[in-house]
Length: 111
Image 1 (cartoon, rainbow, N blue to C red):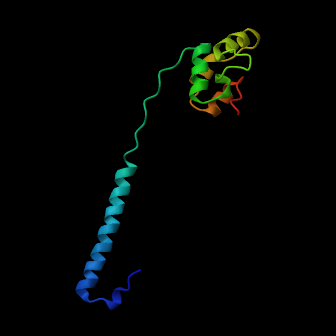
Image 2 (spheres, rainbow, N blue to C red; image 1 turned 45 degrees about the vertical axis):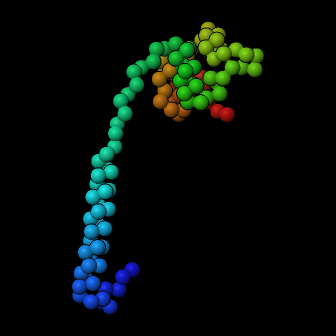
Image 3 (tube, rainbow, N blue to C red; image 1 turned 45 degrees about the horizontal axis):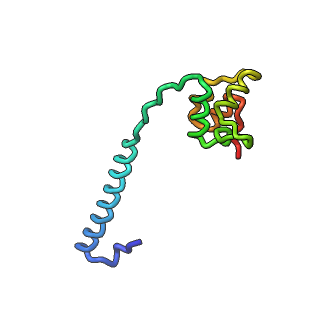
């Protein structure tokens, strides 16, 4: 860094003052930015319907949201599936991320 021993007293004070100012500035900036986190408001719960679950699949970009090879849309597939298997549609519709979605069961959400 700086070798303050080779500077004159006045220059050394200016250099030390500049360094102190920069340290104080960055500490103040860090304190300001760390106190600036915003907590988003939680989304209202979605209904426990196939349409809401499919909308969440789409939001999370899961392949289950896309039509099947035969052209069946997600809600149609969901309605047929719930006749055979019990799904927690409330969980599927309100999962915040892919990990939560997978914990609900019935959805892999893998490419």
